[in-house]
Image: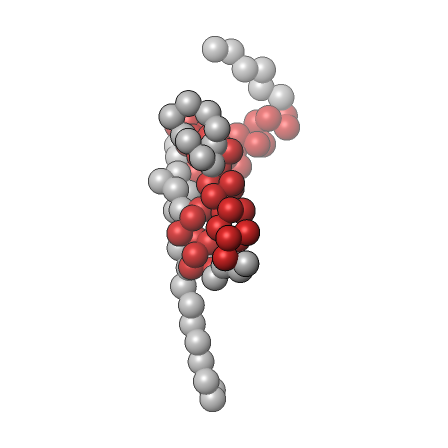
Length: 90
């Protein structure tokens, strides 16, 4: 497959390499494509998308905590974690 490399596309690929922590464009593009399919869903092999799952959970429960949102959106390609720090009387 040949993809024309424009200046804008080159900057996008450089950002994608950094965002995915990959050293090869092909691996970064694979991660990005898998992530998009997981978020979008409704394509072979991915079932219900994470975004749809998040919206359904919010609709069912009325509100979600940061931990609940992180649990829904967490993927192999882009792990999502929440750390909470509560302080009283500093």
